[in-house]
Length: 443
Image 1 (cartoon, one colour):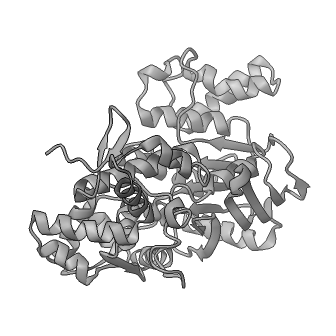
Image 2 (cartoon, rainbow, N blue to C red):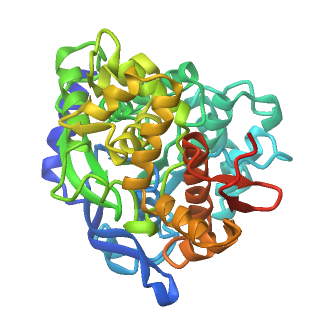
Image 3 (cartoon, one colour):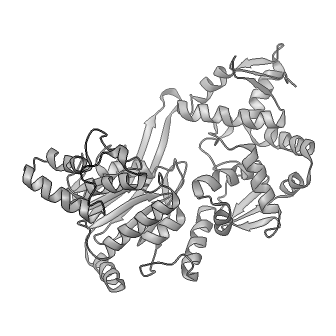
């Protein structure tokens, strides 16, 4: 297997790229408030005989880039070519596997796999032959007549893979194909796919996959493009020179994982509260992170064996969290000045340690002070409530204000986040039935 992988890597050097993306930008018009930039000046090359990973947090534009490469959307600026030809629409040499299984429930496994060939006008006998071969390849032999409702999540995703492979694409695009699966099922499917790839049994030339799982990227990929957020852009390219099969306990593997964590938490020259989440000031889009999670992370880092500073990779493993779960909590603590993130570590600040040492009332008071100081939207809502004789204001007013700067979904999530934090701090209250902010505390 190792010799096959080395041969593939030598071929990468000799071949021209299958996919070439140059200065790709994607922006959506927001009317008077300007535009929402999702991708900014992204360059990418995908060569034959390699697996490339797009690694980053949710919302960093990875899936948008994947859809542009597939020809499902047109970028606002920049060029994407496939084998030197401009990508102007869906390409029969590219197949996509999405996070959701996207199977037709009224069709059997065999019929679902045949569907792509039927759309291409392939004769019935040839469709059946190729579909059965793909089903056998992906490990579903014996389930041809089963319906999706009879299959587990892992088996449904195998059907999706068989449906993609049966059309014999040159490039397979995978958008977080394992994230909807349980840990053991995902690990089994990853291993089976890697075995097929390394043995040269996959009828494809290259794979481009989106993931937010750092260890998954290091396990599978020859190259990893690390995406930054707000807007989405490539901040680093990592060449993974470890032989397959890879061992998570290998010191070289662990060092690479830690290096990627460090690159994803590197500080910029911006103030701590800026650049973490989209937007600035009251227009900052906030993640819906509960105060329980924030308190729990502070308590974990403050306690043994970390004693105030933790290396993110072992911390994530200890808490069974991936970057989409851990980073929003850690970055919210950084926004509130309870922690700093740098070099792949999280370190509690002096206020963070005081929070750990405090009782319930002391924690609430400290959280209120930091919420008012470092979350402009919270301070803005409180200021409006203070200025009104009734000390009440409709939440709709603030959602409308936010929608001048962000999508309706982001605005709703941001309002829910700041409401949760304010309730904990008793900074202001919210009446869900009336959809109303108020200074009245029911207690």
